[in-house]
Length: 171
Image 1 (spheres, rainbow, N blue to C red):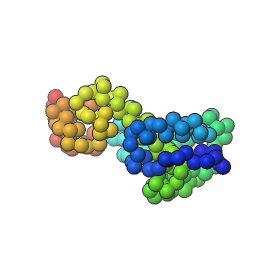
Image 2 (spheres, rainbow, N blue to C red):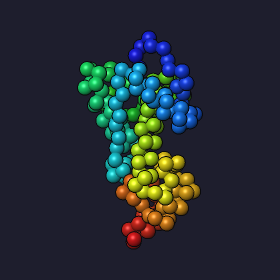
Image 3 (cartoon, rainbow, N blue to C red):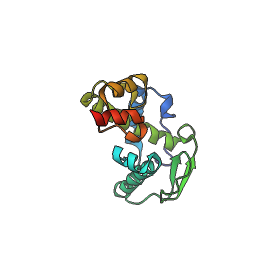
Image 4 (cartoon, rainbow, N blue to C red):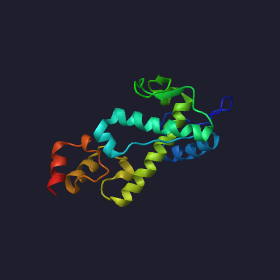
């Protein structure tokens, strides 16, 4: 976010905001931000290298897009959570940063809105898992759908119970 620019009213920890509020704020954040760069890791990458390393990989991918957008690489990065040994960039980790730091809260909102949009698209392609409501979290409905329908290529096998993976292979 630009230094000296007034903070956008209502920006807070994305988990404390309604989906509609996050959507509205994400538009404002994108309008005001010097740069927004997103990164992701695939389901296969999460299963292969684990969630921690996949998170770092996604962050590195996002950081790799910044020089093209901003014209220079960032000199310091703020991350939500604990320090990341393998990030490869100077950074400050802020535990519960999305509730303590404006820039991290903005990033959290944009990330969650992006994730929710992807989950809505997946829900249309794979109805019955409740992804439009649960965003892939293990709710009772999602667990029931896994038992009844099995895994899709978008499920992280490393997060599923062994018997679900076995059932999926046997189908």
